[in-house]
Amino acid sequence: MAIGGGCMDAVTIPNGADTANALANMEFNLSVATVGAANSMRQAAWEPDNMWGWSNDFMEQGTEILYRQIFTVFGAVTIGVIGIYLLWRSRQADMNNAVTTVAWAVLILVLVTAVVRWPVKAAEYTDQALTIGMNLSTVLINDDKVQGCIREDGMTQDRYDELKELNGEDFCIDTRSAAVVASDTVSGQVLYQNWLRTMLGQSEEVTFQERDGEVVEDAEGNPVVTDSNAAYKYGPALFAAQAFSWQEDAEADDPGTRNDLIEEKQEIWRNLVAQIQTEDPEAYANISGQRAWERTGTGFLALLTAIFFSLFDLTASILIILGFMIVRFAIVALPIIGTIALLRPAGGPFKRLVNTVLGAIINVAIFSLAAVIYIWASSRILGTTMPVWLQVVLIGLLGIAAWLLLRPGRRIAGLAAGGGVADSFLGRRTGEAEREAERERERVSRRRDDARPEEVADSVRTPRGTDTLPEQKTGADQPAGTGGPSATSASGGGGGSGGGEVYRPSRKE
Image 1 (cartoon, rainbow, N blue to C red):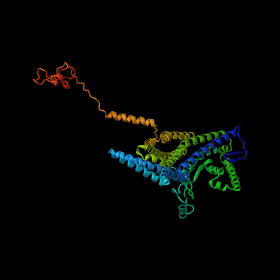
Image 2: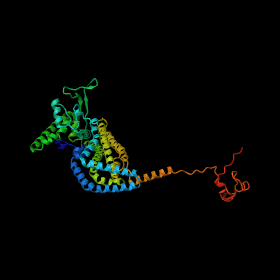
Image 3: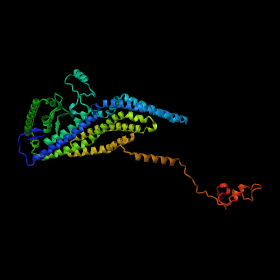
Image 4: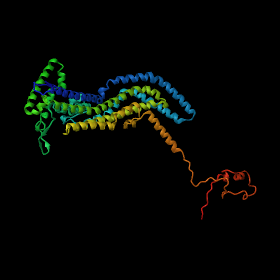
């Protein structure tokens, strides 16, 4: 019977155990596939040089053809239209708009020409700026197995040979990229530990010898172990006996060598299982399939852990890849949009393109940092001694918190709508109708602030035609010769008496 890829002699197992073992193996295989997909997508997102190498020729040829066939031809027509517009504005003595139009056209010309001249360089500079957050993984995510090894980003073969020559062949050099380090960490924490629980029913437990609060090391620099379980003692050897390393996989291209490797690994597996049977009968009951339904439950927890972890990790990788793709397509589309954008009133598509590119850059920076922190936090949770079910719950809550804080769905919608930089940074989603309504509200608010309200005092009273105001003189009191139109108007009916003066009652002494 084969369990976990290793051959076992026939043993007596309970009824229904075959089905349970098959279900447990299927659950763990799904976990491996889920984490493998997340690792592959992350490596594609974190290594733009390997992912986007095909796009160099695409950008060079695409920008050159569009620049020559569209921008050069129709751009000349657009510049002629700009000249006519400047003459018209000059006749109206509107030099401010004329100078602004010229400066805008020069900016577009310089930008389009520079990008067309060096499209690959523009993309490379953008990639270098965007991968800064991903390199943070070398600080947060540490691999204890390579402790003491040196690591340099972008190490060449000459530099590797130089270090080996200076420090000896035993000198440890970690040549893995940031993406590979992250993948190894995830595989070790999410897959390997769950694989041990599925195969042996236990995770690694070890006690090291300590002296004065420090772990004692042997002559080779390895910690001295005083007590350990079967998972710690036999786990790495069991794992190596049921899988090929990269070097063994390369050697297995030869059919004869492949058969020899398989037979050798089967023999190692049988010997290890025999030792486990002698030292730990409980672990042997799991690896022999006698506790099949317990293996099924452990496999289900492993599947939940892989799914909960991979949901946000896959989303972050997809958004990073989308950001890199937007930058490259924007470089190719710039000659077309720049032809129209030479006219400042028609610069809307160019502004939306800039907003989309800036939003993509911000998203890549945010989600690359978030992915590193997410992997680091997940590895810390899985490295604790908490129960497995509680680790699964915390991983799920961590993913939910990341979704709520960063809102990846809204960010994708914001990129499609061409929102502003602030919308991309904050993850807001604003439609065109909402933006127009907001602008209308601002215009109404400005008009309301500029308007001066009419003030009517409570003490003001409009005089009636029959009232005699103290400030007015009657016809009898007026000097002779002063009667005229004004006097007639003052003595006439209506509210015009007093020439529109206001009655102010005198204060009583």
